[in-house]
Figure 1: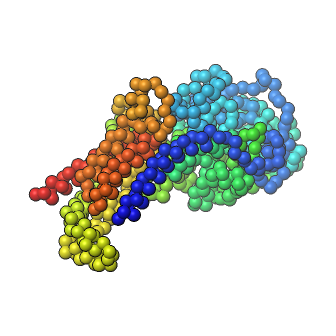
Figure 2: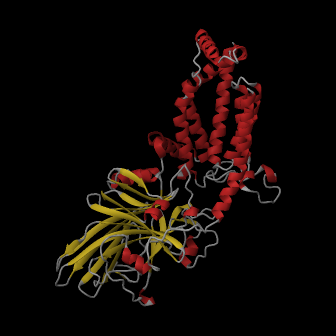
Figure 3: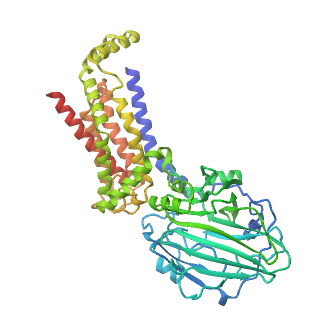
Length: 588
């Protein structure tokens, strides 16, 4: 027994040391951006990278000639859900803002928002600066584009320097649901390239590319879809709770290709019929959806440029021969927007793309997390407050699991009633473990109690509770959703702290000391729940656990989103109520 107490004390000390030191270590590690990276190309500039292209064919020449400034135009984008602009030079898609979502004012985070301190260089960006930006900033470090490729290196094709001509009837109209954008470019050698970009009321652009061959010889071409991102892996928010990074759905299987995997393997390729691919953040997605009937290959590559880590995802089919006087047309969809479950499911049906909903990281409990996410979104819309929606969903789940919970509490109370008999047996047969086991089995049989009777119902409830925990972590409905009082963003930790008297003392605190009101309420509810529940037969161990567990959980939950803490606190309060009712019924 003394050895068990010593081991428990040692475990307690080690746990506290880890809780204090781990946040400090992670803070120092995130500040160190000097770790070496693998350079997946030998080139020192983007032109050579484009020449390598992560595929096995030769490519066309890159047109170096810069178009005159007067020929370059900015085309406004203004739909029901998106705002932004496109530049006729290069036609890179990198200036997209979400009308429904504001940028995060609290953190300098690359997760689909402006970095704090970024300069907003143009008038249109100044007008949009308070909106969340899918591509992160105004400097083109994260963008999507389409490229024509040919094995004939002498063939002039559209490039980053190409200035496209606007062919829309009224070039003053913004790109919107009612006014698609028509563009063209002639290479001066018999090829005319045309592009039609239309946008719907949500987050999908439909891009139709065609090439007409007016020359007297055949040409071999293919259209590739490209997503490029400059990204430091140390900035990734990946935890065991959700995934961020390159992603794709190929041949009926979701592939999460992490930034580290791309760097280590240098080039990763998937072949598929249909599917989709892109880059996912916690709340945002940029993804190309090719024609679902065509075969295509997608390659994921990494290279280093000016000490920056750049990742390139490229998709495309086979080369197609365009005969003299012939024409080739291809259609692709580009999703640039928020990972709203209803919207993703709608596109899955509308575009015939399989499991587009898996862009949301539902985890291994997909069969539970997806319905719970729908239920949470419904309740939030019903009551108009995400925090109240969380409370209602927690209550509904508790009601559904009430029979299991009631059985568990009753079993635990019966075990609590026979604790004196068990302690007497443990004392009597302290030196004879075999006899102790026999006597314990006999007393369980006489009393009609199963030693796992209290655990089994709890285990059956665990998947549902874990799925709800997951939903609260990944749901975009949590982002910037307010509750009451000082909670203005349920996706962030409680902003106040006990150690600066909840903001009365203007001092900056390390993260592990930011223990707010809701984490404290959660710790108190956990303490009370343990106090009225069955305890360990060993008095010293019972007292340590009574105080240790609430303190440990309070420190851990203080760093989690406040929505999760509110859910856990309310769940504890409901469990206390259930335990109280069971205790009263047993005393009658």
